[in-house]
Length: 250
Image (cartoon, rainbow, N blue to C red; front, side, top):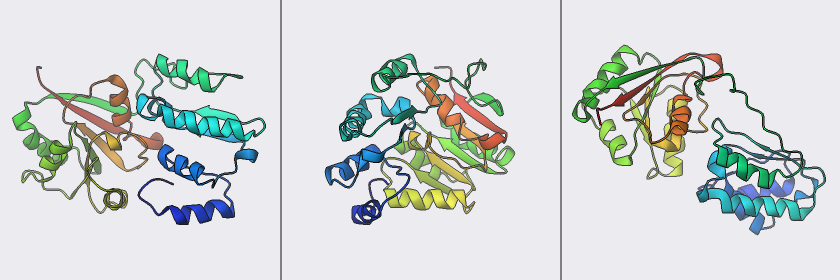
């Protein structure tokens, strides 16, 4: 359950009773305020993408939700946090929420690179003015399957979609695209009605589309964690994939 969908339908479903509830923090808070939850029998509380959820943009919402669960008094709730990237500060904050029986399990501790083993990483020195032509060539050479292209800004994503050099069916998702339009674009991409998805970092997490063979970043991201999440959109469920990053001498 998430914003942009009618809350009344969700309220009806909750009041009938559900076994598992999955939601964004904002919509979970809406249901808490409407008293649509009964947490007294809760067994598990799971925080996915924990590093993002404990960042300053979401931390207050998470604290409100966890505080509501605690005050409801369910017995023996197990709290779990998952993330592909867990910086030290996340572990510090996690200890605040997981005071009893705190444990940290690292499934990638033996990897020097924290990306999936099945990804081939390539970098291309590509001046900004040449990137659309380079993208067209790469999609011809590598893009036999489905491709996600990551941009740092919404304006860049729109420009690439409108490029006359790229002869592929393209969908775009970013912060200015409405929820309904995003869902339509993702559905077209998942069902292979379009070959290329151009996106900002709204698509760097949470997308599990097995058929993505290629990820292209039109410039390096600002931090290693973002690189890990972007590149992880390919090589899903044991498949192999390629991640290509454009860079300049700057």
